[in-house]
Length: 257
Image (cartoon, rainbow, N blue to C red; front, top):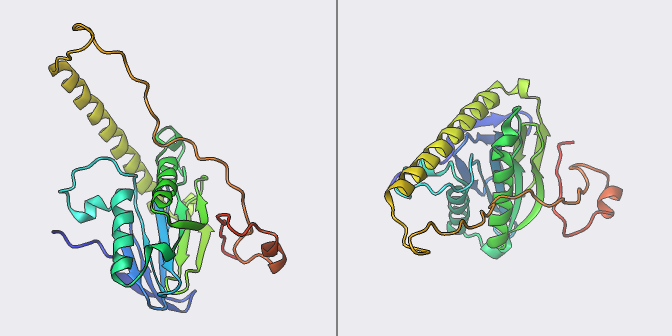
């Protein structure tokens, strides 16, 4: 079995005054240490999960929702997909002593940072996927900053659960633009290949239904629809007065002060 793609880019973060780890796409990291996990997101999504009682937490960074890839592929390739990336993060936290019923999640990313990306909806699909996945796992989202048009830099303190996000200009992160262009090309090519494969299969399979006639076409089901509007709550670092008026159980949008 391939080794799990744990982030290895360790450094000292001068801004936060502690050791840090920079997560690249398809990586994750879990720890109980007093450190900061940092990543930069475009249409990708990062989920930060924290167990307050155990004092542990972790972050992942995935590029696409589950796309039906073969389970035999390498772990580093599988981490591109949200279903595998979320499963790995949750399982590794449980191995460290975390309890699923205590987990709290903060989720970020899913932006349409390039013109034309809205036609592919990678960011929207990623955002909707992570919301649905965590709902099915009964893990509460306590803060989120998803979708929009800006890249984000996210910092997460796994021992305390504190998270901060900073909106970026695309020009500040040229690597994000290159990554988004490559991802859009891969998605378009994969979609074309699936359509071609489906067309070939239809041409070679004789359907026995309706006295030899083709069966009636079933309505298509859109798996990743537009997310429902969510109430915005106070920004990260807002005044205590603003915080006092916020709904207690709503997902919060966090922002760097």
